[in-house]
Image (cartoon, rainbow, N blue to C red):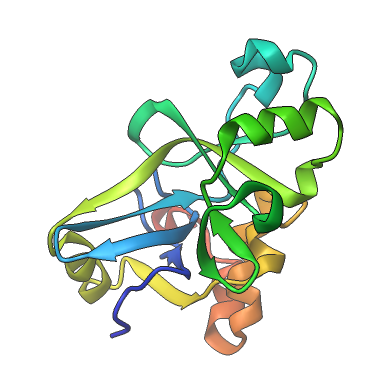
Length: 182
C-alpha cells in the first residue's frame, strides 16, 4: 500500500458508491497524523466563478466541487507561483496563494482558466481514515501530473487518470457504475 502524501492523486475505485466520490480524482494537498485533505478535480459545480464572486461577474472560469466539507469555502490550485505564491504540491502545481492578486489578474485578463482551478469545499479525512480507506482499496494512488490537474475536459479526468496507468486500470474505465445492472 502506498503511503499517502501531498501531490498524489486518489482515484476512486470504479464501484465506489458514495455520491461525493463516485468516479472522482482527488489531488491530495496535505497528509498529517491528524488528517488529510484534497480537492476533487472532476466534479463540476453548477455555477461558474462569476456567479460566486460579484466582482468577477461575467467570468466563466469553471468551479469544481472540491468535496463535501465546508461547502461555503473557495480554494484554488494554480501554475503561477511567481504571481500568486502558494504551497508547491509537485513541480508546477501550487495550492493557495494571494487571492487578491488572483482577482486582480483575472480582471486584467492576465490569468486564464488554463492556469488556475477553483473549488467549492474540500475533501477531508480524520486521523487514520485515509489509510483505512486505502487498505480497503477504495482509492488507487498515483503521482499527480500537471496535465491531469489542469485537464481541459474536466469530466474525463477519472478515465484519463486510469488510462495512463495502463494494464488492468485501462479496463476499469469501461466498468459499469453498478455491476448488478449489467
